[in-house]
Length: 270
Image (tube, rainbow, N blue to C red; front, side):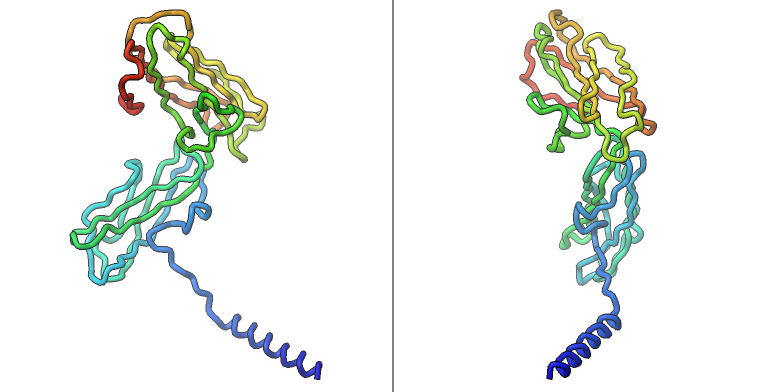
């Protein structure tokens, strides 16, 4: 009896294996995105632009025509293969985005607006990751400079704004952290070879930290001085030993005013 049960079980298992082998693999098409999630997004190095081709699906029961393409990042280059889509039809969208001064997970949203106002735009999500050559982060006043900020708002900061009184230069202070992700650390460790700054307001002191990152502390060159009110828009160039990011350009906007802190400052203001 036991032998009969075993032989019957083996036949069932064999039949199941044959059914699996004869069943064609199902590949699910991914519409309107290049990755199913940020975790599955492809990774590229900072020195390479991110390029992808996304399948665009028209979910409507009628043919539609795309009249306008909008994106959350003006740096994005887009090329839609067809502007006219049949009902439930598909086309492709080629995407190219520069990665300079980016790091970690990235996303750009694209909206395809249709000529028929009854239909909602076709929404597209572009997901990818950037492996930076050197990560440039701002360190918050009470944050640990040995750790990379976890908040994206403090990561990849290349513009620094300061608004202080001209008689309180001792309050001028910025901390900038340079670090390399795995696979990007130079053979002899990350090093700052020099800092080029033509101005006279700031001084910059780089310090190599225990984890191999470099902390650059920016303070007033003369903290006891009192200057005239004014606005300083200056460039700072950090020279490094990384072969693919040997120069890091930072923009410093410093406002010295007796009304310091009473007006909003746009760091992107030229």
